[in-house]
Length: 153
Image 1 (tube, one colour):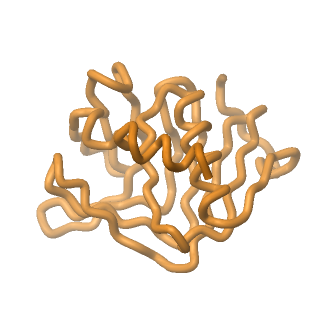
Image 2 (cartoon, one colour):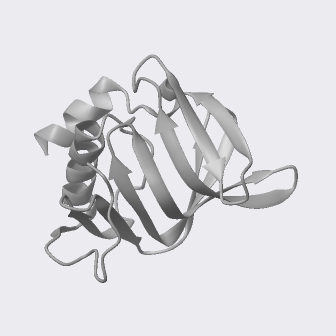
C-alpha cells in the first residue's frame, strides 16, 4: 500500500481505546504489514488511543506519557513520545515521528525503517538526518507466548 499525503490522514481511520484493545490491534496491524510485532512496545496502562487509516497507511498511538523501552537483544533504549505516528507499507514504516534513541550522546529521531524479512531478517533504521543502522528483526519481535496472551484477552 503506498502512503499518500492527505489533508487529514485520520479521516476514515479505525480508532481503538484502552491499552489491551490497542495492543491487540497494533500487533495485528504490524503483522498485516509484515513488520516485527514488538516495534512499538508499551506498558499495560500506557495507551490512550490507537488509530489506523488502512487507505493511506497512517498509524498513530497516543500514550499517557513519554516512555522508554529497553531492547536487550540490541542493548538499546528507545524513547517513545506521548504521540507516535508513522505511515505503514508492507515491510516498511515511513515518516516516523515520536521515536528516538541516543547514539553517540545525541538523541536521534527515527525517520524510516524497513525489514528484509520480519522473522529472520534485518531491520534497517534511518534517522531524520540520514544516518542508518541495521539490527536483527528478532530483537523487535514479541515472543509467541506473549502474543498468544494478548489474543486471548
